[in-house]
Amino acid sequence: MDCLRSFNFTLRNQSNYGASEGFLYWQINSNHFWQIDQALPNVKYLIQGFKNINVFKIEMNGDVNSSPSFATYEALVQNWKWDFQIVGQNSSNVGILAPAQSPDYMITQGSNPSFRLSKLLPSVSFETPIESAKEIIFTNFYCDGIANKTTTSAQVGFVINVTVFYKYEGE
Amino acid sequence: MDNCMNQFSFYIAKTITFTTAAGNYANWTAGATRGWVVKSAADQFNFKIQGFNNINLYGIQMITDVQSGTSGVNHGIVEDYKFRINFTAQTPLISGNFTSNTFSASVTEREVSLGKYQSQILFAQPYQSCSNVEISVFSAQGYDNESLTELKLDLLAQFYFFYKYEGVE
Image (cartoon, rainbow over all chains, first blue to last red; front, side, top):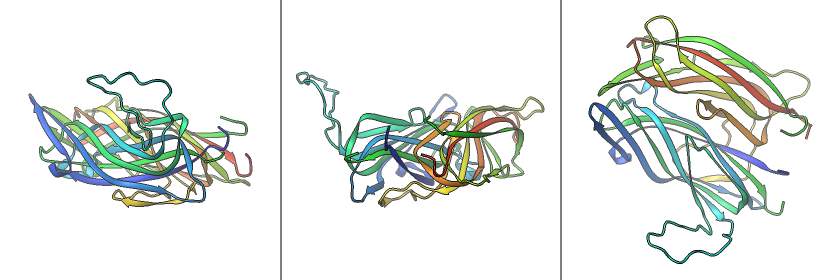
């Protein structure tokens, strides 16, 4: 697309995740399984400048894993996910909503839409952009796997590169 | 890719033996499963870009295969692997700042990870004046390692770098 631009930022962390950080463990027969579900508003990027931006795509590219240096708390990471929110105007829905149903699974997000990107689904793109995007907020980190060495925590490190594709408003 | 996009590539074919003695191999038993991880920062590949014009980097694609070695008693099942790629260049920026930053997020880092499940990264706005690319770290994980002291992996990788010369739109 003409005038499509992009910027990047990198998230980096290494922690030993215990119960207070959302670590959960269970065992089936002799197999160990674990997950980490950490819900914190821990990264917010405020977009500044003379013009607002319209976001066309976000892509995550990264590495979430254990390491030989983690000694006692290794685990095999099999999947990872990030929830994030773009503070901006979502594209308008076209059509008529069906009458209220129960259960009603449909949620419309007129503004500040939320998304989840993961190891196997690392990007989301829009034909109609998220307009006047002011902030990008990462709200939740999740990963799971097998073979955790200890039953009380898992040490996981990540390096995640985020690419945001945008145009300036009016272009 | 639009007009005037170029590419260069290089190829890695290497067998690496990771050992607990060297500190780049760890394995453990969890219930009935053996798990292992390796991380090698010693086997680096550094390519300096030379010539009259600098280049602007638009993307990287990788075609790879990592598997257990075929000899010895040091096999294991490879579940996932990653190559970390660093490059020396000007980062495309936008005005803004982090108002909350627990994870040391940075807009100036120039490092990407490509691997088994994510083999390509493309940018709409390039990293400019790229003068150097480096494969800095290789890491992998898996299970059912045969040996507790060493693991041998065969690496086969082709890296493609997409670029334009500075001054070419």
